[in-house]
Amino acid sequence: MAKALGNHQEETWEILKSGGIHVVTEAATEKAVERLAAILNTSSPMGRP
Image (tube, rainbow, N blue to C red; front, side):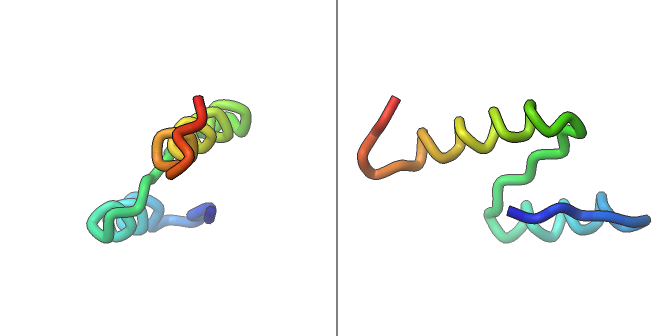
């Protein structure tokens, strides 16, 4: 998990996306955490709900 800061956020997000990394641009921390949890749950080899 990383946070992009500064004037080049959009460029950083595009670089990460092009590398196959999930990028969450939600500013609210709780929404970003919800998105991260959803990503982890769907990519888990154990298939947890």
